[in-house]
Length: 199
Ligand code: ADP
Ligand code: TYD
Image (cartoon, rainbow, N blue to C red):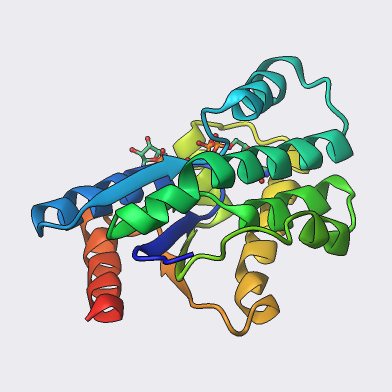
């Protein structure tokens, strides 16, 4: 594959600012004259839509079925869209990636190495930003005042699993970003890291 793009991924728990920061980065890079392709996972293909309808509304899928769906969505997207985008654009930005599967699915009781194996064929990002917020901030942004214990515990585990990712992938480039600061401040830091990487 003649890849041209710098492939950047945003990861982090729900509400950590991935959508906000990926859009800001796209805008900034486009203003600099670069071509940018932005996508999010679950994607908009049939499997992505199936996942969204099942996890949001019906919750009928078992953890293993969900894991297979996330991997299938990603794989179809790679075949149909991602490989082409990586050849044509200067930057490709992903709001979530296979790292989400490696963090969320084991917390649903599945074997980490099985998930890793399922995702063996993914395109690895050049840079991954992990937007890190505390569970208290997560609850605040979600507007949840009476906190259900399990939910809080799940988010604590999620945060920990995210922070362990760089150790699990020592050859990959990660930046853990403090996501509790002002939106503009976070954007500045991300911008600088991206420009430095591509200079
Ligand atoms: P994600 O895509 O990770 O779920 P979003 O970018 O959609 O997160 O942000 C979730 C919510 O938090 C939105 O209402 C957004 O406006 C708000 N938000 C994003 N970044 C910050 C920040 N740095 N400080 C305070 N609120 C933020
Ligand atoms: P998303 O639509 O990104 O939700 P949000 O905008 O709130 O971050 O993702 C939906 C949910 O799916 C989210 O809770 C994370 C989860 N998820 C996984 O469990 N595994 C995966 O591989 C992906 C991509 C997402």
